[in-house]
Length: 199
Picture 1 (cartoon, rainbow, N blue to C red):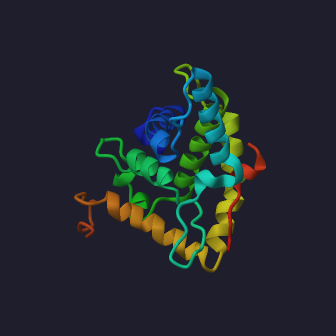
Picture 2 (cartoon, rainbow, N blue to C red; picture 1 turned 60 degrees about the vertical axis):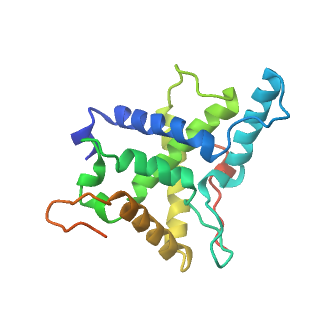
């Protein structure tokens, strides 16, 4: 499907990377505190913040729900990158495909999560994303493959599975406003970087 719209998967990942670089600094507060007065302080603060977000898979989790339970794969950064890439108003938007009209597919969510992970690793190393930096396909594959069983554990959990599915449907409902699909009426690396909590 991706190859129908983009020349290759590298171009597609590049589009996700661009959206990620645009979105995550504000979503993860990747900026120095006012107390950081020198360039070295700025650099250190951003690197530390990136490391904190990666540790324990914090970058994957949203706010706790009304029952005080963790929301895995629900961070707003994941949501905003998914919506920006998969549900934009461009001709290359994937929302024209039926599979993307019901919910954000799990593999699409994992691809975004893997790219966010890799970009955060770049922040941890450099404190910003250098123009010449490229995403390593090996690192992306490793992050993606590490998250697959984590996502499967969430999806198979009696409480967290239905909650995640409902959230992925809600994201699509937000993004499909004003879009009428054909034939359908308009709808009103460190292992602890991938930790989930099934409380």
